[in-house]
Length: 238
Image (cartoon, rainbow, N blue to C red; front, side, top):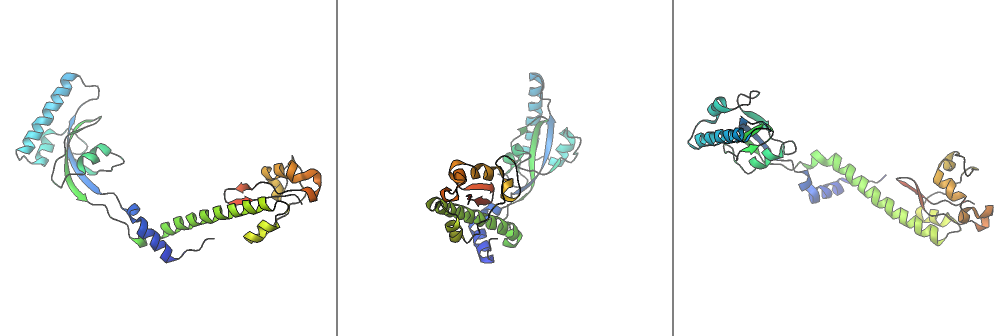
């Protein structure tokens, strides 16, 4: 287990706090001019003419809510309210609105429903989450990262030591303050218990260099192998 202090977590937060910025919030309303995606050129022209007429009325100071009731084809939202515009769910709306202020209109946006005349009704800038709000999550991420770095360091040390002193695992175990584990008797082609349950171990245990025709004095360490994602092991038959 990798131990970390609150100071380390805070330092990690200070150096990456922009990653914890929430997305800005935009709420909007619309006037929908319905247009079938298979509309004829004449129908498309008629829809565009409606959009231009509504835009002209808005530019002349007409009340948006009144125009929603008068013109909008959205029967599910008679007030035109779209709620919060999520950038992931409706990028076209979000992109059209993100530079606008409350009360301003975006350029008409077309989708499968037709044309949307959009009005910003509320904006709230993104905020950076507090340290306390992300402390637990960040501590877990930091602990996992440091554990991976420690694992890689030990892996390289084990590999170098096992290759340099290839007649015994004692040197590698001593350097890493680890314990050499010995297996029970195992068969090359039959899964056993303990270390013998791993196919990689049995394959290497009976390889030319490691098995050495069953003569311990001629046995050599195997290459470093991974029994699982977090446990590098070098094995030799002795």
